[in-house]
Amino acid sequence: MLNGSRIIEIEGLGPAPFAAMMLADMGADVITIHRKGQAVTPGMPERSVLDRGKRSIDLDLKDAGDLEIAKRLISSADALIEGFRPGVMEKLGLGPNICHEVNPKLVYGRMTGWGQDSPLSDTAGHDLNYIALSGALWYASLPEHHPQTPATLVGDIGGGAMYLVAGLLAGMLNAQKTGKGTVVDAAIYDGSAHMMNLLMSLGQTGNLSDTRGQSLLDGPHWSRTYSCADGGFVTVQCLEPKFYAQFLDKMGLSDDSDFQQQYNRATWPALTQRLTGIFASKPRDHWAELFIGSDACVTPVLSPSEAQTHPMNAARQTWRRTDGSLQAAAAPRFSTAEWQPKPSPSRGEHRQEILTELNAQQPPSSSSG
Image (cartoon, rainbow, N blue to C red):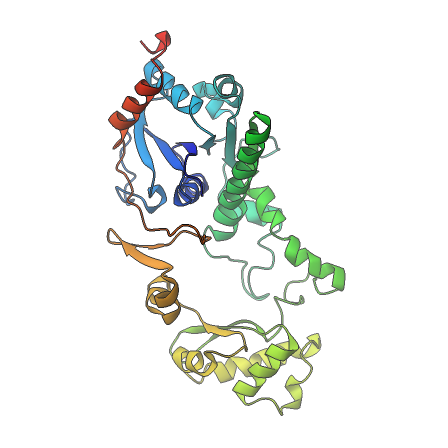
């Protein structure tokens, strides 16, 4: 979908390279400027899944010649991605004003936790910190447990990378029409709060409470995870009455009067305890087999490795093992293009190739030495 588009990514961590990976998955020519001489972080792979499909050039942005190369790359790009604290790119001489001087159509994507201008802009933080303060962590567990989400998914990826990608694509479309670029201020704090709007809409119908465990989706016996006899888990979320009826039928509880009042909050704790005992009596795969193919909205909780071997994955080929690593395929999918995994580069692998392209496009300026 993005063949012919060029994205320059300044090496960073987490949501910024994830966003660049998504754009590379969609066909964009993503050139990552890796730090020259920077060793791979201990414990991290030489070739990261997040770099798949990208090209790499290693530059020292504090060197005048390499800085000029970076500017020439930026002048040829549709968008730029950076994930530093506010002010760092300006100190490097690559702030939005300078970049727009060399490329007025550039969409300048900035990925931060707290935003470019806020009381916390200059302070450190991580995924859990951002979503805790935005309100997005509040409903993320049962009321008797500490709030906890799948690592990085709600903040870094959901509230961060996805919103940066959406902002970049919108900015690129606008630049095509107007010839003018823009700055995308993608803050995880903002994005994670924005994702709450679907849940917040329940408040308009009286189904959302500030008390954890009392809302439509975080309190009922039919909307939670249960432990099984073998230590595995199953999820139950039969929200609609017709699905709840199928759930009761499969569980042999259709004639149990205690389960007939699906939305009676007063009964939820006791019914949860009953279901806890029932699910704990059989292993996970027993329940998975019982509910497979039904509309009862019950599924087993799988690890990524287990998900790879599940029949669902046999059909979708979502999880794939490439170059020895398990990774998920590009999403979403397009009817006009079939995606295949692309290799991840080593640091600086495409330096000469990229420099050759630049020299073919335009001669180096006098400031490059």
